[in-house]
Length: 129
Image 1 (tube, rainbow, N blue to C red):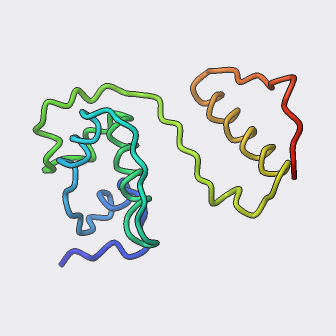
Image 2 (cartoon, rainbow, N blue to C red):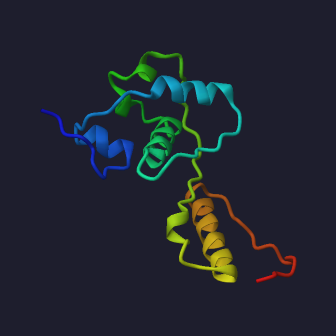
């Protein structure tokens, strides 16, 4: 019997671990095709990270992960797209300037991943911390 993915937050791990997965790809496809701005507001432990991870796998063109799911047989083109994913849990313990520095570092790292140089802005407005 397949296990429930308790504590598993990435789509890739759910597929590779053969965990139970409720196929939500039809709804994610609708979100992608509609092309608007979305704010995902749900209680803790309610699948936000898994949803984002699933969208990330779709945008990275990882069709092999979606065997037997709705989106595999859809007209989605599986073209690879750059994904910028900022996980705020890694910077949440910082405040003010420290957080600005950590976020800037993360953005530069993402830029390097895609071969984009992110330059520092020389003039920044004064901070009120």
